[in-house]
Image 1 (tube, rainbow, N blue to C red):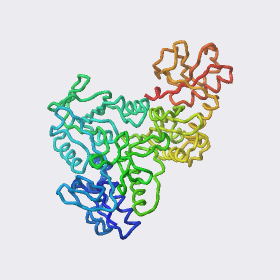
Image 2: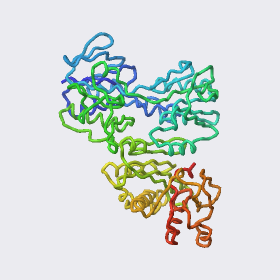
Image 3: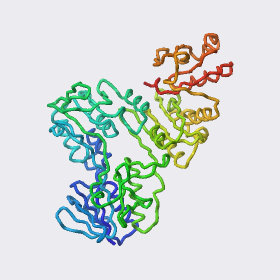
Image 4: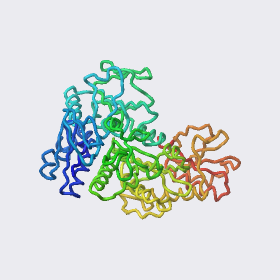
Length: 529
């Protein structure tokens, strides 16, 4: 049997090597359009920051290694123009033809390059290959660029921005969306942007570049930004030109449609990696693959089915993490807009707590947003902090994976050591508060729902925390509430607030026992900004 794989990126290499482990006799051939092979695109920003031992470390395997170790034939600079499924034959750009028994399309995603006047200037680059990364490096160092412009505020854009931020540079990040990091909710992404903004890094959202003039970008706002070097990082779209020409079916969002066995609508043609879409475990909606772990998983399942094993791609769970500018940012499950699109009702909860015991100098705060259903099922989470985000994100993702609930969060036993966790971890507190919300023992209110007749009671110090609301604001520390309880009106809604959520929750319990009925916990990320 001859298997031809179109695309020599992570997906294509993973299909080929896994299939070889399952079948020693199958003939495997990889066709790659470019002259680069097995390059980890996730590793490219590390080239800019000089974080690699060697540039070639982002190459998973060489053509020679694939032949010598796996007996897999790799052909570079080989473009496939057409597929003829009737006779199982592909035609290459050099007019030659190859026959196949099984075909796998792993052409990945195409980086979008917006149609902007001047975007082809010599100091404007895309970061999509080893060659492009080296060009950016050479230009950056050779020119000693001081003003850097990044177009696109996604994961790659932020990582490129960090890599090019030095004591001598000023970086401007421009994104046409309402917020950076579109996988996150607007409120959480805004909090991230505010925490990352420094004298060296500026963000412009709801903004586009109208024109790249000579070392000056003219923005849609009318403002001009000087730049010595610009990097285009405006996102990727599945590369589907070949499937379209071959009558291979696409999903509504533009990715190749595959069944649970990774097969397209045409017999013996499979697809995997960034050019397909799969079912989101939580929303049951189609979602693109933007994560290397899911790329490899889809490739493994493709190889299993090529080898004759009926293996299903049962579900996909979004679980993304990013480390940038000293912070770790993560999201798993769905965000609010995805839940609303899928028609799934939900509650949301904001909370903040140190990753370790607060008495240690090494402890730092984790900000968390939890989304959960009326049945208690966890639907999504967004986390940000300097330490401990990865393990907590993976714990929540694991619970979502098996359909778990907030009860499991509340009852979790987290490995305890003062540097790594509090005795009652932030995950435990998120679960406990969520339980109280579902049993109506705790009522919450978003900042935008507070009216002018309400009273917002800030119970933490300092009282300089600002809340953008028309309500009357009282500043009364938790320890002073009992002795000043007469100052709190009983005929108005009282919304309790603090910088983390925990102190306000304690005050909520106190006032509830003192007979206050119209009590609410402020449920907003506003205090983190």
